[in-house]
Length: 164
Image (cartoon, rainbow, N blue to C red; front, side):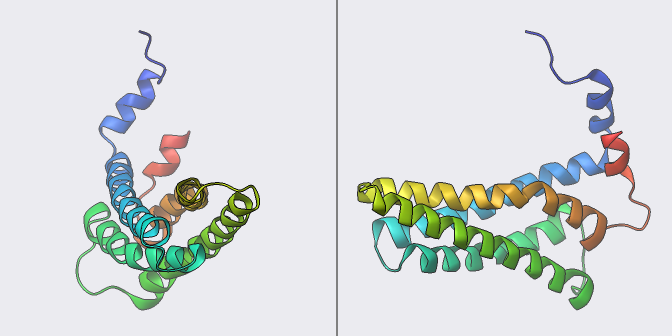
């Protein structure tokens, strides 16, 4: 089978610190999504504790904590006290943007599914899919912001060179 990724790009990724950060960011995202989706599905789809939007709010709030610490400490290797204006406020601002987008998507999916007489499990799946989709839209943008602004090293220019 033919390799579809150009060899020069593979070579640059192999020795790239940014590629390692991207991999760790992806793992942190997978963990965060797993936590969020499990909470959302259990709270809304199985236990019927809250509405779709309330369940999504709780799921996003809970999953944001491990996301912050995994990204800051593990993906970008930052240690010590977090800087309020340079790290905490922007991170939670992005988390809030994701929350708003996901609340809109979850609400729309819930209304659509109910209006079209989906069964309970189908509604739960539609709501979870909408939540994942909303955060998927922001995923690449958040990596660039984390890498170039939030947790950036002053001389980190690898991401731009990877895209050349």
